[in-house]
Image 1 (cartoon, one colour):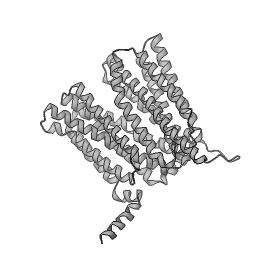
Image 2 (tube, helix red, strand yellow):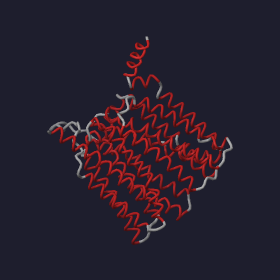
Image 3 (tube, rainbow, N blue to C red):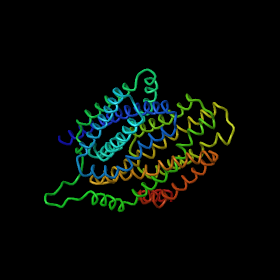
Image 4 (cartoon, rainbow, N blue to C red):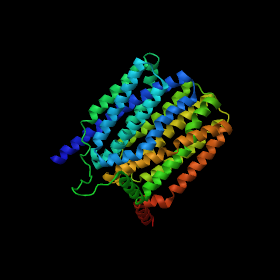
Length: 431
C-alpha cells in the first residue's frame, strides 16, 4: 500500500514539476524578450546587449560550486523555493523602480545578475532532486518532460512577447513574470523532494565537513568516475567551439545572406520545434540503452551541421533555397541537442550518489559554461577579420576531432561494458 501511494505521489511530482518548469520558463523567456528589446531600442548598442548576456552567464558560473555545496548540505526543497521567491522579489524590485523612477540599464543589469544566481540555485536543487521526486523507472520520462517544457516555452514565448511588446508597457511584462514565479512557488511547495531520496543521515557527534572539505570531497568523487570527467571535458571544449556557430549563425544569415527578420525568426523557431519533437519522442519511448554512444553520434551530427552551415556562402543558392536549407539545419540541430542532453542527464542521475549530486551537477554546469563568454568574444573578433565560412569549417573540424578523441571507442566501451557482450553474442550467432 505504501509503495502504491509513493508511486501515485511520484506521478503527481512528474506533472507538477513539468507544469512548474513550463510556467517559470515561459515567464523568464517573455521577460528576457522584453528586456532584450528594451536594451536595443534604448541604446542601439550591441555592447550594451552583450553586457546583459554576461550578467546572465558570469554570476552563475562563479557561484555554481557554492550552490552545489549548499544543495548537498541543506534541504533542496527549501533552496528551490527560496530561489524562486528571490526571483519574485527581484522582479518586484525592478517593477517598483520602473513605476517610481523609470527603467534604467543599471536596474536591468542588477536584476539580470540576481536572476542568474536564483535560476542557477533553483536549477541545481531541482536537478539534484529528480531521483528523490520520482521512481527510478521514470527518471527518463521526468528528464524528457523537463526538456519538453523548456522547448515549448522557447517556441511560444517569442510569439507572445512579440504580440505584447507593442501593445503593453514594461510593467505588464514584469507582472506577468511575477505571477508565473508565484504559481511556480505554490506548485513546488506541494512536492516531497525526499520521496525516493537515498541520502545519508547526519550522525550525532560526527565532525561536520567545512565548505572547502565538502568541495574537495566532491572533486575527489569526480576523480573516481572517469566517465563523468570525460563528459565535463567534452562539455567545456565543445561548448567553446560551438560558439563559432552561435555567433556565426546570426552574422551569416543577417549580414552575409541578407535574410529578412521574419524568415530569420522562423529558422530559430525550427530549432525550438526540433527540440520539442525529440523531447516528446523521448518521453514516450523506452530508456536509451547506450546513452554515451548515442551522444557521441549526436555530437558528430552537430559537427557536420556546423560545417554545413557554411554551404550557402560557398555555393550560390536562391533565397528560398537558403531559407529552407537553414530551416532543416536548425530543426536537425535542435533534435541533436536533445539526443545529447536527455540520455546523458538520465545516465548521470542514475550513476551519481544522491549525497554528491549537487556538487557534481554544479561542477558540470560551471565547466560547461566556463569558456562560453570567451568563445563568444573570440569568435565575434574572428568574424570581423576572417571569412565566415572558413571559421565555421575549421571550428567544425576541431569540434569533430575533440569528439572523436574524448569519446574514442575505448571510452565508449568503458561507459557501456555490455557492448562487448552484445558483440560476442552477435558474432556467435553469425558463426
